[in-house]
Amino acid sequence: MEYRVSKTRVVPASVRVRILDRDNFRCVFYGRSPATDPGIKLHIDHKIPFSKGGRTTIDNLQTLCQDCNLGKSDEVYNK
Image (cartoon, rainbow, N blue to C red; front, top):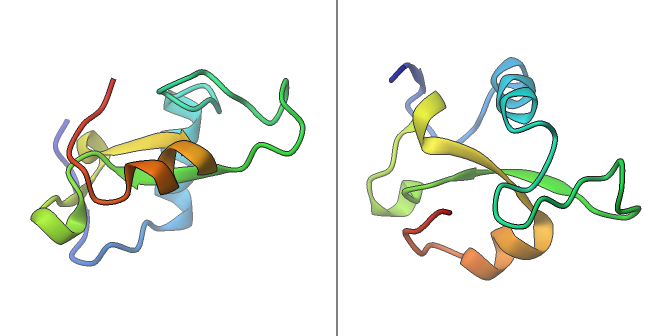
């Protein structure tokens, strides 16, 4: 479902929860989760970066751990 949630990079709290739930509260790259890996912080990431024209839509958002998200920067890739 391609649903426009925002014209900005800001992800509303209700959408953040929806993405986290969809991704089982785990990093989609490596499966890390705060439930099993203490200290892990999860981020909501744009698969196609906002800076490269990616939209803030349900289909373009994914859950990444902080390490994966910061390492990805504004690259266009996902697993």
